[in-house]
Image (cartoon, rainbow, N blue to C red):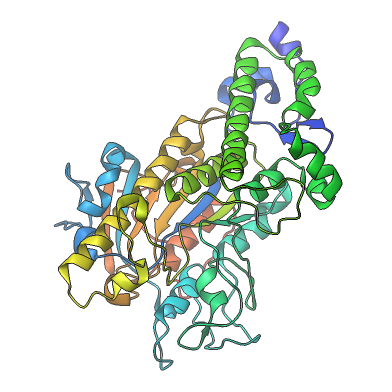
Length: 452
């Protein structure tokens, strides 16, 4: 009887403090006790992960005799870091973004790849202000479900790009540096600074705008949790043992993220009393991606947003991956001209990025959410707008998460050549409550996602 009479918490419950607003994950107290066992209140979330510069397809491709086959015990070299998650991923082959092709515009595959990936549109070749692509799939979804969350969508990344100028044979840098487009002429630039994302999620941005208050807080290295501690203690008194444990684990995870961000800033020699337009970003790619994945997990866990796009790096990225002993520019290596040493380095970079993706899968699997985990309630795609030799067909594409039943995993699905990637987007939009019959160049919903 005690559980039935316990006061129900609203799903949008926050811990509040001076300059801080900490959203909470789903707790038992947020669900009516009489229907808790049958609760299906966890919404579907959407995360799109994009990596640049394509792949060496021979180290990615799977060969199957049938359109649908179980994944082999041994995965190709690029996918090998996902061996432990073989039953939690599905590899899709045969998907194409026709909008990324030249269609008479000549060179510029990187710009077109980024701009067309989620829009399906063929971008206008310009490096002026007259940008023209299309509204991206994630923004259609955000417009539908965004009113239920604090943030309609989050656009994140791990490499800074500029939004003006000529980056790729007459194509604006804006095309290469964003995959999310709010309108056909307005890209959503990704945020790469962990501190900025953290402050956005936990509501301390008002302090950052006041240099005096910000300097005072950072001088004493106060945690965002310090300001909400009294509120947390009051809440704990009204929670059951299970919820108290969930709250403790969640607050510990938030503090861990914050500590790692602070450590990065200290290593970067940041003076908290100075104006800093670009807070410190981890130099180590591994640490940068994992902090961002942790922030993404927290945003989804607290239902702060249901739509996230994440760029592992920008198109035409010249990042050097010294973490794995590669000092060469990634983009330069992809123009290898058949040089086996350069090809080998490209394969190592692709596999290293997949290794970071594996970390995100594990985070989703281990994060409780309502009647299951975030993995059960999230749709994730991992892919690129380029394949071999800057082509736009047979794009490297993975899906993971169960998406509240949409994705049947552990398989390799081979679709007919020239199947639009937009067909996958239509299926995912349906799962997010948008009954679109057509999007971009789609020809229907992609098959073999949940059915055999």
